[in-house]
Every structure is written in C-alpha cells, then in structure tokens.
Length: 331
Image (cartoon, rainbow, N blue to C red; front, side, top):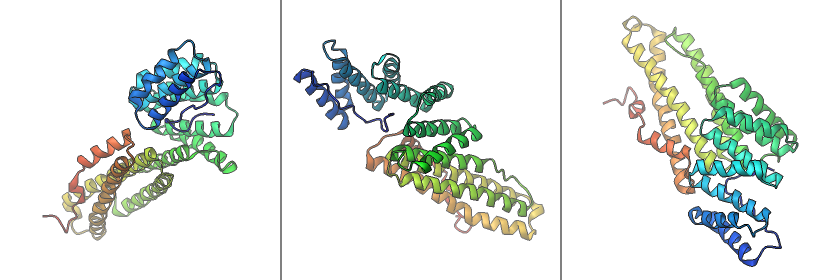
C-alpha cells in the first residue's frame, strides 16, 4: 500500500533487535513526529548503516531517513535515498512506496516525463483499489499541470469511478488532492474561453460561460478545503485566488479598452457592460485577495510550510490593489 502522508512512520520493529537499536528507532520516530527531523536523520542514518541490525529495520530506517530529508527540503538527497530503496529494498511494499515518493518529487519539481513513467509503472503492477485510485489522482494532477486536459480528465474520471464504487478507497489527503486537481481542470477550461473586445452581447455570453467554469472549479476547491488537509487547503485557496485574480485583471483590461474607445460612448449595451464590469471587477479582486489571505492563515495556524503557502504570501505582498478600486470609489 502506498503511504498517504509524508510523515508516516514505519513503526514495526523486529522482535530480535537489541533493546538499544529498538529504542533508537523509537526515539527517531518521536523526533520526526515532533518536527525535529534535523535530529531524527542522524539516528535514522546510524541505524540504516548498522550492519548488525536486521535488514527490515535498516530499510525502514532508511525510508524514514528519506522522509525526513524531504521534510527538510533536502529533496535531492531524499530522491537519491528513495531511489536506492526502490531498486534494492527487500520489502516489496516499501520498495513501491519509495518509487511512489520519487515520482511525486519528480512531479513537484517539473520532471513530468520521468514522473509519468514511474506512476504508470506502478499502475501496471498495482491490483489494490486504493493504490490504483491514488495513482489515477497523481497522473490526473500531473496531466493538468502539463496542459493535457483530455488525459487529465480521463485519469481523474477513473479515480472518481473507483471512489464511487469504493467510497473509502481514498484517504482525506488524496481525496483533497483529487478535488484540487478537478478544480484546476475547470480553471484550465475557463482560461480557454477568451473574451477579447467583441460586441457587448457576445462578451456577456463569454463571461457567463467562463463564470460557469470558475463556479464549478470553486466548488471543487471548497470540497478540498473541507478535507482539512493543510497542504491541499493551501493549494486550493492559492489556485482559486489566482483564477479569480486572472479574471479580474482581464475584466480591468476590457474595462479600459471600452473607456478608451470613443465610438462606444453612446452605445447603451456597451455602457451597460462597462457599468457591470466596474461593479464586478472590484468584488472579484477582493475575493481573490481573501483567498490568498486565507491560504496564508492556514499556513500560519497549521505550521505546515508548503510551496503553496509561500506562493500565497508572495501573492498577498504583490497584490495589484488598483483592481480593488471601483469607479465610484476612485480618488
């Protein structure tokens, strides 16, 4: 079974171990669970290198050593250790877990072809419903990020179908990731609906279509937040904020082009559209800012430092506040 969280510790200790070795392993686990991975890696490394220890314990210590390296953002070292376990570990379950972690890190670092190949390799040899559901989520999320929306939709649909047949096949972590990926897919669809400078009635139709995609995306992001997984809560609020901000910025551009075109000054439909944009754009920008701020608050309250939270902080600090100002409140 593939591990659900980075902080999972393999707690089984062979009965034949010496008391000292078992105590060291237990102490390392306590340090890791307490967030003291800087100290835990020293103990895990020592156990993994102890040739007198049982092979199962050494592999478990090496795996947890890699987990701690990952939590410490020492990604290259973590990948190297996971890769060794993925090819040499005697424990088949741990071997697959290690390969899964390498694929996840590859995906997070933009090495998409390598990640895709590794996920597919795991999927080909996977029979358990839970494993397959998790892998469909990973592949779907990867395809969204690489712009392959049809592939993404196919993989995410398979995950949803397994979840429908087996409601408990995904833990909250992966279920939240699935919801974020589905939200991302609908944001990508919304971005494909260009607005441009068209006759007002056509612009309204385009805006409605784009708004429908964003509304569906928001529903998925909210569903992800409800899983109470800090990492994916941050991802969902970040992605929602970015989608709303992009829409607000595009509305501002359209607003400016309408105001700058003298030929539309006396056109009733155009003036109606401009007034609607002037009211909608600040509200959308406020929602985007609130989403970024919620992301930052989750990061602070949970203590979970993620790349999503860091992006949210940057988004708050660099927010284009001019988008918040409506035509009636402008100085």
